Length: 136
Image (cartoon, rainbow, N blue to C red; front, side):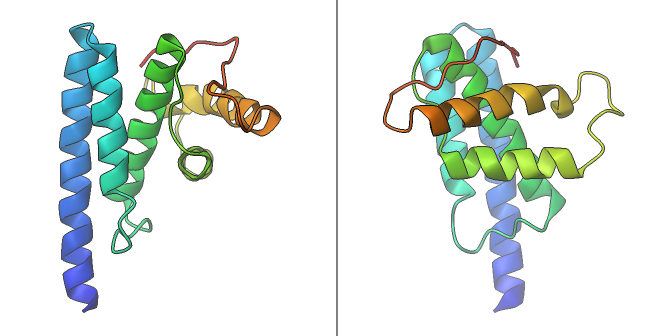
């Protein structure tokens, strides 16, 4: 059973990575609402119980999709991702060496932290807007 779940988890990571690519393309085309939906759907794929967050591909896809979705949501002034997604992505980004690649995901840590704090301050509001903007 563990082998099957590992396989299913890997497939989920591939699907989430494909969603990231499609969302980035829509963002470049200026279709932000579509890009946000695609990114949120990619995150939904990674919420299945068989997804193994201990695997780097799954965690990387999750962090990338979270950063993209929150960036677009901030721009559109709409809700982005769940508090759990923000917390999980932040934990991953803080745990890895995100400073080594140029323009790495580590740049999103302050932005994602501000989004998480905004959710805590206004848990029932539609928006958790930040004064900072980190475009993806």
